[in-house]
Image (cartoon, rainbow, N blue to C red):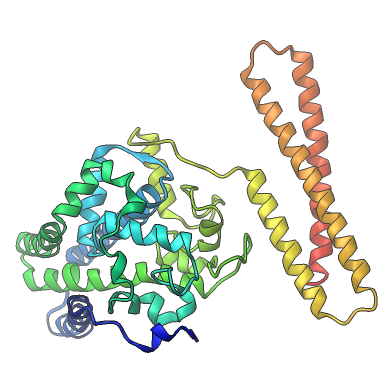
Length: 381
């Protein structure tokens, strides 16, 4: 529990936010089931609700988050415009304000005084409570940390007209679609209210549950966790431990089989020429982070065990880790040299062959050392 006296004095309630969250939630949980029971929703309206939800979520994850907050890639103005519309449709504030909050979160993660939605203040606060009261009113209009975004005309246009865009999308899209398919109230309830409530809470899970539920394979310096369930619910944002360890990578999921539709969207945009400059953290840095985290976890477990030769085991563990890092660095240096040699047409075939042979030898050595390391750390898992 926080001990700072300021927490004992509750800040003023933000009645607009309370009203929006409460009214939309009540209509969604009462109106949608009643309409479904007495009238029923058409498959067309259900599909539209899913498409609208996906549009909102991807505008936040690929736009607000990975593009603007972290500058993990660059996007065509048309794509940025679509993100701006989707962000207003999602009713999560303007991109400028959202990203300002998010950058502060990363800068001061888990600091109860400075992190806007610190998970250490509990689920309720990090999930929605931080938006219901004026907890950090002193910085609501301080956008010094997003000066780069203020140079983006689309960002500033959306920020200036955010309220208008929010009203137009949230009333206009459900009403227009409902009139087109002859299901006005069904569209208002499903595409309007339920879509908004679900969209809100899926995003809010990233600030709350993604810092409470899951594993920490890359770092335990903060509360961020990796969770497959959270990844599925949040369009790939649930690999949150990786994200906080390597926030400028356009991916949250680094394995091909991991669920990250936001990453897939960015890759598709890149292939079609609508996005470029995709940032990726090197395999070497990721592998070293995993090994370092395994070292720290194993050391912590060993310290808690009652073993007669504990110090010798920890010393051996440290030595194996150092050997692992040496072979890791050697392997990735050889891999880099091998790749560069393929690009350089002036290098003789004999030299290329030697580089390739050296690379393969180091690869085998690195793999063998990895196996030794894994066997060692798993003894105390």
